[in-house]
Image 1 (cartoon, one colour):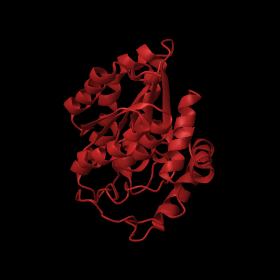
Image 2 (cartoon, helix red, strand yellow; image 1 turned 90 degrees about the vertical axis):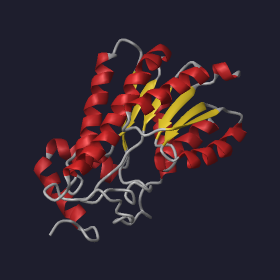
Image 3 (cartoon, one colour; image 1 turned 180 degrees about the vertical axis):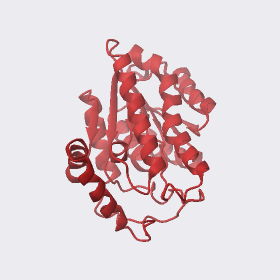
Length: 272
C-alpha cells in the first residue's frame, strides 16, 4: 500500500488519554495521522513512538479554542495527504463547581474548548470527509445525556456537541457522511486532574477512584470498532452508560436523585 492509499485520521487532544490511545490504535491499523494538541513536546514523543510502524504522522500545536488553529490543523492534513477519512473531535476540558458559585469565565472556557473546538474542526474538515465518505467523530460523555451535578458547563458543552453532530448527520444524510457520537462513561485519564475549579484553576487531583474506571485503551478499541461499522452512536459501559441513558428517557426524576447522590459521595464534594 502506497502512502497515497493509506487512510488518514485527524485527532485533537491527541497528547493524552483517549486521544493518545486512539492514535496508537489507528497506527496499528496502518493509518497516517495528523495529531493536534497544545502539548507539542508530547506530540513529538508520540510521533517518534508511532512512526516506526511505517506510517507518517504530522503533528501540529493546536489550541481548539482558536479557529485559525483548527483551520491550520486541517490545512496541514490536506497539504500532507490530500484527504481526511476520520476526524476525531476529542479535545476536552471539565470543571467541578456548583453553577451558583462558578465564575462565568470558566463556563466560557469549557464551551470554547469542548463545543467551539468541535464546531471549528468539524466545519473545516467537513468537505473532505464528504469527499471521502468518511466519519466525523465527537467524543462527548454520559454528561451529554444527563445534567451532571457539579459539572454544569461540562454537561452543557457535551449536550451542545451532541446536538451539533446529530444535526450535521441529518443535513448530510444523502452524501455518504457518517457521524459518530461517542459517550464514554468515567474513563481513566487526566481530564479530572485538569478540571477547572470555581475560579478557573486546575484542581490538580482527581476526586474519584480511577482504578475501577474503563481504560482509555479499551475506549479507543470500541471507538474504532464503531467507526469500522459506521455506527451513529456509541454509549460505553452498561451501568454508567447505557442504563443511565435508559433511565433519562423513562425515569428522569429518579435519575436526578441518583445522579445527585452519586456525585455527592465524591471527596470534597461541592454539595453541602
